[in-house]
Amino acid sequence: MKIADLFDTSEFEHASLFHPDGEPWQPLNDLKEYMSSLVWPKCPIPTGAPLTETLVLYNGACLPADGLDIIFEDATKAKLKVSKNGRELPGASVLMAGAIFLSKQISLGKGVLVESGALLKGMNIIGDCCEVRQAAYLRGYCLAGKRCVLGHATEIKHSIFLNDAKAGHFAYLGDSILGGNANLGAGTKFANLRFLPGNVSIRVDGKLVDTGRRKLGAILGDGAQTGCNSVTNPGVVMGKHAALLPNTTAKPGFHKAKAILR
Image 1 (cartoon, helix red, strand yellow):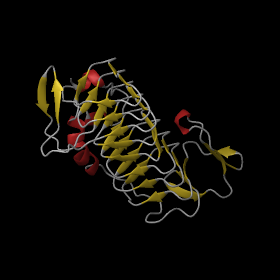
Image 2 (cartoon, one colour):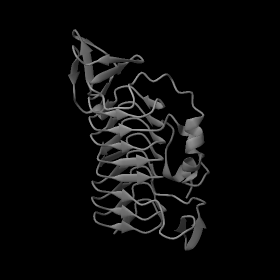
Image 3 (tube, helix red, strand yellow):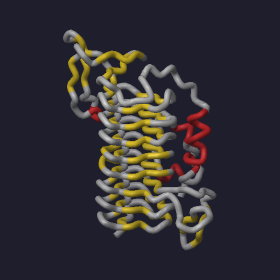
Image 4 (cartoon, one colour):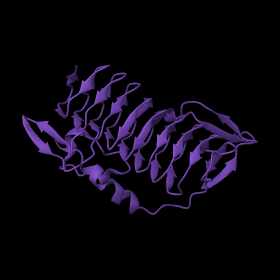
C-alpha cells in the first residue's frame, strides 16, 4: 500500500509532492505546505464578486470576450478555442460571466474553462485543459493536473486530482486523492470525518493502521472508479482500476487493485 503502487506520477507536474515509498495519504499531509511554498504569479482575475462579463485569460492578462470568437467545446480534449479577427489565441482560458474568484492565489493553466456559478476561494491550482463546471465549489488547497473535470455542483477541499481525473457531477471530495484517469459517478460522496473522536484508521491485512489524520476521505488509484450515488466512509483506499458499484457504501480499508466493491 505505497504511493508507487497506486499512482504513476511520471507526467504529473507536481510529482515532487508524492514520495513513492510513502503511505497513500502522505501527499495530503504535505499539500498545504507545498502550495504555500510556491511562488504565485500576479493574478489578473477580478476577485470578490461574480464576474460581470466573460473574460479570456491570455498571456497573463484578462481580455474582455466581447469581439473574440469562442468555441465552447470540450476543454479536456483541447477543443476550447478562442480567436481574434480569425487568428487563434493558443492556450487561452475562458472565465465565464458569473464565475466567482475570492483569492489572488489561484493559478489557471492553458485552455481552462471556468463556467458560470463556479466559486473558487483560497489556494487553487488548476492545470491545462481542465473544466471547472457550473456551480463547482472549490474551498481551497485544490490541486488539479491536466485535463481534469471539477464538476457541476461538486464541492472540493484539500484534495488532489492527478492528470485526467474526473468528478463530473454532484460529488463531494474532502481530503482525498484521485489518481490518473480515475472517474466518479454522479452523486459520489467521500466522507472524511468520523462520528467518533480520534484519527481515521484503516484496515490493512486484518490490522488497523492509524493514518494520523483526523480527516481523511478516499484515495483512488489510477483508473479506479465509482458508480452513481456511491459513498465512501473515511479512510477508503482503492487500488488501481478498482470499482465501487452504484448505490454502495465502501467500508474503511485498503481495497486491492481491480477489486469490485459491492
